[in-house]
Amino acid sequence: MDKVMNELVFRGQNDQVITTSLLVAETFEKEHRNVLKSIRKLMSATNVAVAQMFDETTYVNEQGKEQPMFFMNRDGFTLLAMGFSGEKALKFKVDYINAFNKMEAELKSQQTKQLSAAESLLQSVQLLV
Image (cartoon, rainbow, N blue to C red):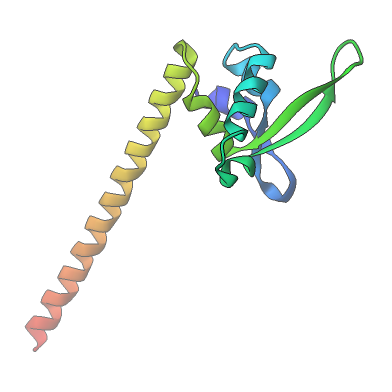
């Protein structure tokens, strides 16, 4: 999934990591119109934060016609992809969960190392006293 994610996301203005509804449709093998419908459904929610995750724009298709498209940030992409079903969507969700679990384990490991260092320092100070 790392290779897929590298092809899915890119650096936008202000170094923000973004993707487009077109890339999401291609990656998850969905019809673009259905991805647009899903995004619009998310944006129709009364939650203001959701609307800030997506930016509607247009692109010119192969026939030279202007068509709707969305840019989205990581949060918008995650919110959208979590609603998808199918094999690729399931793989994304499992990879996402694994990434969180790995990060959590690393943070706990760092906390344990910091605590051990603090305990060692405390024992040294107690010996000096």
